[in-house]
Image (cartoon, rainbow, N blue to C red; front, top):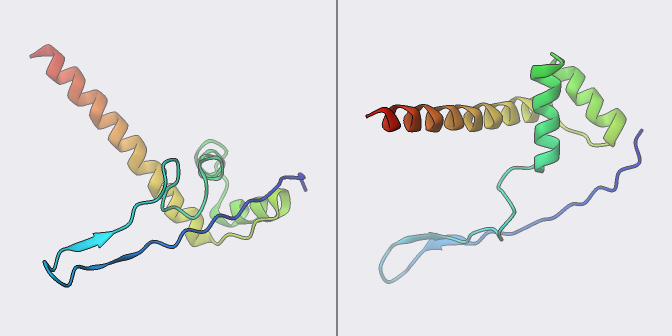
Length: 104
């Protein structure tokens, strides 16, 4: 096991409806934080393990437990794979849009 220092940060996000105007509101996270349960390093590790090294979700779960002493589920792996796929798709679509727009 690699000796990593784990850090757990919890934010409580307040949300509700204004009693006067009935508008919905939701507090924002501080800059640099996201709503995902894992940080950017863990998410990129999952992406590399599943796509580049072709590890199964179960093997990724075992890897995180053995090397980082972090317990995650196969569902967490799957959810974070979707996050990476959406980010990649957005980046590709932006590049495609800019390429088409520049030729017009």
